[in-house]
Image 1: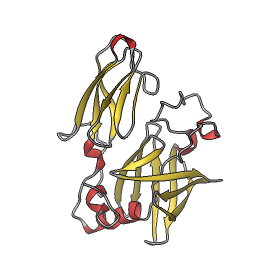
Image 2 (image 1 turned 30 degrees about the vertical axis):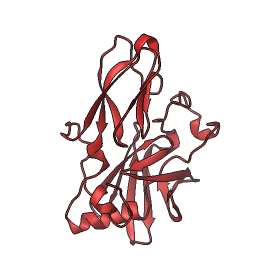
Image 3 (image 1 turned 135 degrees about the vertical axis):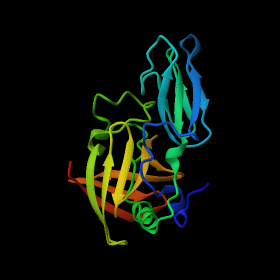
Image 4 (image 1 turned 90 degrees about the horizontal axis):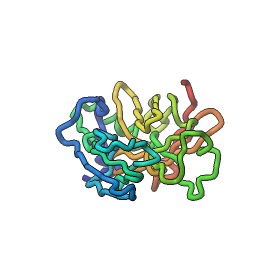
Length: 221
């Protein structure tokens, strides 16, 4: 289902989508690098991906011998593994009115974001030891990792945004939570994407396709 701004709460409202227990609607994809060669494996939907079970004696290292984007998982250098595609993380409907309002605040007003695309990968957002080259699409720069607070004047609401080093993101407002994940130079929430830029004291976020829809955050942790 395509997530537009008018129906986004149907796709995104709700909490607890990152639980450790496997969801029945998650997909599992086995991808194998034979003879140490590169291999890509398509995924059916844009979603957060984690390594579920390594099948090779060769280590599977995210960013070096495997990674993913919105379209596929790739493996290389002898990595063979089964990967979990968290399709359940792309959306969950909560009929509660407050949840719908929260989703409008968190997503409709674009308070979530992503790393601005940078083709040459040479600016300071890639200046740490965790960045392993342009194939490392799940990389998250250090300045994005942490907890940030912002204010959405459109909804007269305070918002707390947390981004983890593994790319998972959570935004809370009015007791409700919306989840997303950073990948391929952007933060993805369902079928909607967002840009993010570093500011002096935190982040500035804007929705792709609506650059006037902007919120500023300051780092609190």
